[in-house]
Image (cartoon, rainbow, N blue to C red; front, side, top):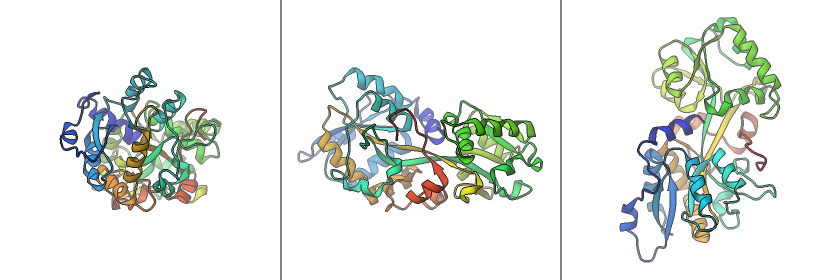
Length: 341
């Protein structure tokens, strides 16, 4: 999905499964027990190491994902019930897979009080309604446009069919964003990922209109198409628009009136606590990392939107940071798998 996939791919050649952050182990204090946590590389890894100084609960031995987070699932399942890892960073589809394989500990607000400040809609739940992940940050895919490159302000989904936008729309191909661009249409038209009829009908009209000037296969293609002037309207990861905003006035269709038909897709990233590990310590450590100050610092250092409602996002992410009420009105969180509620 958007930022998530592109970032994972970018570090795939660097991260190696089983690679340990030895600097953390060498500086371990005798009065701090050791946790093993799996994280992504790049800015995420740097951000996590930075905010470690904001807690005194545990010393963390870091293991980096090898490419996408899904790659580690088989390794975890093969070692069940023995736990090589205590905490694993993942995102929406991987959370579901881990849950289906019965690898996740339940977490509660009673044990981890900082979770009370995270919108409930961001959590993955099992069939009994138990919380099974810890949402740390989220990425957004949404519609937007370059204000100085369109002939009129776009206010409603039907505006995308206006012939004045001939060749001006960049639309992601089906291999991008796990098709959230089409699910977004479904939600905007009163459907969902389980009710796609209106979305397919709208997409047929959009294709027939001649307004799609580029079917993109990567974030780079979308970025190049917008910044080169080939197109001026797109469904994209928020990062693409934020980068473009350094050179062009950008209007993000993130918090339009509910009847506009524009809905943003939310990809949740965060942690899960695995069964078979040091679960009590892991819960205490993750709870500390989810306090407003660490979550705010993590978001600013990693360029992601924090989930704790008491944490302030960086100024650039303000337009795509949602409160619990704003999530209900303007966005949707894909419900992946039968276990999601």
